[in-house]
Image 1: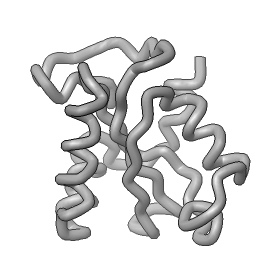
Image 2 (image 1 turned 180 degrees about the horizontal axis):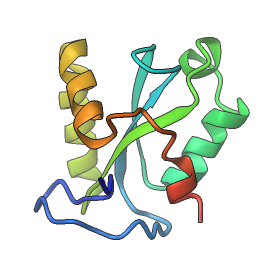
Image 3 (image 1 turned 60 degrees about the vertical axis):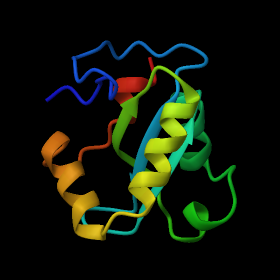
Image 4 (image 1 turned 45 degrees about the vertical axis):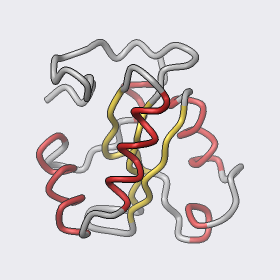
Length: 114
């Protein structure tokens, strides 16, 4: 399944990321591991920063480096609203979302880091 899609219209999209592509993303420490939800306008760069340990705090402390889910949005405001919504979800809802789009919990970084 192609994880690239536009939340606003539900239609499939391209994985070509440019600067200023608002995205909500979920990183994991492993399958069913610790989860982190974030928002960014440059997903490849932000995930690279997490993977390389350039961002301190929660993700570095818990070894959260695997991109398991992301959504593209038309605006940063929409992405931020969605991030806040998802952070309020129960853990099992987040896992269900990941497994619908990425049942094997593959690292999606290579798909976006072109």
